[in-house]
Structures are given as structure tokens and as C-alpha cells.
Length: 121
Image 1 (cartoon, rainbow, N blue to C red):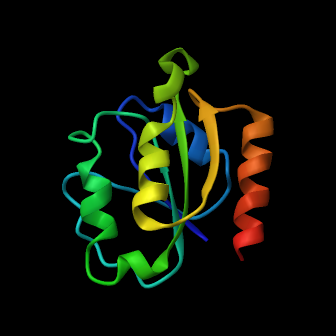
Image 2 (image 1 turned 60 degrees about the vertical axis):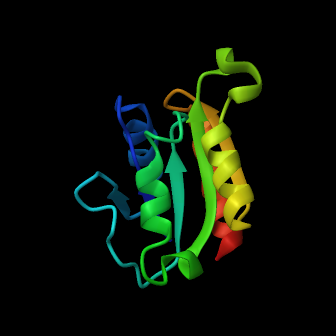
């Protein structure tokens, strides 16, 4: 399964690179790319204006049909807002929230997400 992600500070990129899956980093320059295979999204937690490229990507062509789940990183100091970008995407698109991790995650976070992705097929 392909892992699509965005990373502004590098924390999410560091996490995704530990997964060992094929990846694609979203930027403003490639947000409207067409997918033809199943993918999950790994996202940091930022205001909606910052993460709009995720919505642009999901809503490009038939990408939504290939969107299988979402995981999110953030800072536990955010309290109730921890991982809200991933939670919002899961809710908005009816996909499972696979996992939430802090900063660049740890080995347990990597293991959990790998297991969840394997369960998705």
C-alpha cells in the first residue's frame, strides 16, 4: 500500500521513512496528482488552511476511491486537538483512523501502523 504524506517540519517524513512502504510526499506542486492504486495518508496536525493540499489530493479525479485510511502525528500537548487533522479526514471521507503518534513516532507506533496497513490488504 502506498503511503501519501505531507511534512512541513520533517517529523512526519521521518516517521513515514521508517515504515518501509512506497511513499509519495505531497506538496503544493503535486497535490492534484491522479492515483491508480490504494493508499493511506499520514498527516501532521495543522490548521485546515495548511493541510488543504490533502483535500485537494483526495478529491482529484477518482483518488477518493483509493483512499483506504489515515494516520496522524502531532503533539500530546495539543490536548483534544491532538491528531485532529487525521480525525477530520477519517470523518469527512469515511475511512478508518489507523493510528495517532507523537512527533516522529517510536518503534511501537511503526509496528502498530504496519499491522493496521497489513489488515487493510
